[in-house]
Length: 410
Ligand code: HEM
Image: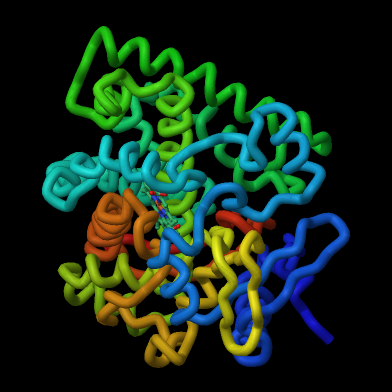
């Protein structure tokens, strides 16, 4: 029996072992699987590394608009009515060229390795504060709630112009947007509630734009607030949408990597020992943690012409969903993919996507994870799970919701 319906089951996708079991099955038996479900417009489920890479790098044949993320038809319909597009917002991930290239160019230089490298002292300082907090908690904490959710949040919010006292509100809004399938994190049962989350984001960032126009600094918020596109100031709607995609993409993903990365180190204690002996391995460990956790579960593309994969004919106008965690564990492309190896060469991983939409914040994400673990492993003596971890029930951005740990510092 086809198991493709499981791909929208938050309970299956919100648990590491059932999610990877599903992907192993699909990759081997049904790598281009047709998803047909009463509540959703059909799409194809793509799970092999080579297919995801091919689709991602052919941006003209596989476009991002009009379907970017899997949503129930009823919700897509409501967005269409309210915003005039099935995606609701039009951010970088929802756009195609030429507009996508123009808007991506606005922040491209800011996100390059050189400028991002200048944020190292800030990341190290914030990492130190959070490891201090962990130490001060006296040997027991919920690593997700006390540390991993808050550390990347502070970094991204400081470059997005969000004051520290507003961070809690931003965290809640992001969880409501991305974790909306999870009973503990969605705002409410009604779809109108999700719309309210978007409107809250809008009103907040409008204020930040006004402030950075008056008081420019060298942060990302200033680049966006003063951006010029085609010789004119960037449209307000584009500008606010840019804030939303960067702020939301920029912390949930890195939080999930930080907590999932620590979980991996506890499951593979010899890898933790390696890092403790040589913290300079933390950069390659960060890349491995990103492959291992692949927190962005999927993105969609829509075909502009008929194509065929593994004997399946996909017609122009049909959509494909690209499953990054499935690609990250594909043994056809990645040697011993179920082994966590802090020294792995991760140049061919797809957890950041690929091609014209490849993650804009990838160097910052690696830096954040690297700085945190360099600080932690240098000071940590031992660490173990104190209770079973829990997962967020989501099939867009996923990760741990809670992970109680016990530990001692040196
Ligand atoms: C471990 C952390 C992260 C992971 C795994 C991740 C993953 C991804 C993925 C899979 C995409 C879609 C790529 C595609 O369609 O080919 C993406 C896009 C994007 N990411 Fe990340 N991301 C991470 C962190 C960040 C951070 C820290 C930022 C910003 C500060 C960021 C900003 C963005 C933006 C703006 C896009 C849209 C790019 C475009 O469509 O042109 N991400 N990311």
